[in-house]
Image (cartoon, rainbow, N blue to C red; front, top):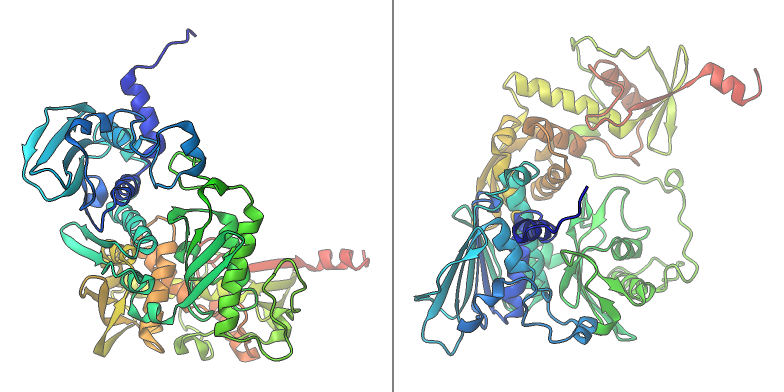
Length: 569
């Protein structure tokens, strides 16, 4: 085939695909431009998950009239002067790709007024082609509006998620920069309703309160360590304040939001021996080091960076977090704390079955499992099993006609609860509990968007939730499994689990999340009667071999395999 040069329009759209993956990419790029312009206030407005409209307005230094059209040319930037600047980048943006890439996939309007100008100028672009520059009244700063994102690329739209999911991703981008720049006042409006706002006081704890809620922010532990030109500071959660996924670990390098698996692992390693299995900490950490020690030009969206000495950065992050934890919660007598972790010997941790680990289980499932009478006939019937005991407080050991069966107690209970919730939903009789006194729960903006998206499915399972203020929910009722104990903590943990579920039927996602939240945990010691009741309930389910997420609930070891293993055959 002959080699030909792509047309400028096609080349621009291909390049835009590297920078603009989804609406959150546009929000991120425009917020970064606003911060580089020295803004003290940044407001973000989105409609339809960002597909219909994205508007970012700031009070920064603005764009000079003669530079308006140039700003939309590829690789046009005010942040670099020569190639040596690439080795010491100190701004969030520097490639000059954001505005032309956005204009290639959306209709764009830019209004800007520098501080010394009496009025603002407006420039619109349709199909990437700039129109005439017009005068317009506006405050000092810049406002960029992107409409009909991917409107000319319907194939790209098919790869996006629901508007609620895209709005959640946009909120995540804004809240991360609100945490990185606590001295800047951020506000975000989703479909005409304010999602959240920060005070811009300069105090990271104030920004964290706006993002995570007052109760969480009040418990966060300060981190501050400076060694060998590497400084680590921020806030981390105490060991009891955990979440079901790693999305609450926010890392910044010179206030640039990054994704780095190794540094995330460094944070979690610092909690070694303090967290339950499957739980992850909350952390907001800014790593400061000389610009020439980090290469920010290694990823199209600038989401990843490369360090000259990544091991040193890993070590400092780990030590900073561990030191803060030890200072807040001294290690018990007889165990010497180590700030080196990975470099010096660590205290020996007994295995799970010797530690007698207990999980916090709602009272609704902590009691013996009452077997269900008159349930449906299983489609994948299990043989009659005899309970022998428990291994590692994780697996139930049973004996059947064909050998030995190991049952994962958490996965098995998830299956039991999931089918129970689905049956109650089908009969329009959810096991719900109304609250005499409604409870307010502070939740991050991304989870508020999730609640709006799942509103009907949540109601079908017994939730009675109302938006209350900017970033709070008013809980008037909820499933009985969540009504005992600390309602705020139960609702927060449930929403975390729900947010981690994969895309699928909304009602099933809620039922699976409820089952996962309510099921007994690995590490919970069960007595013989509880184990028998759980096995009976599993036998009565329609799909006893897997949990709702598809993981096996039971592993079979045949008598023949055991005999061969012991050399009897």
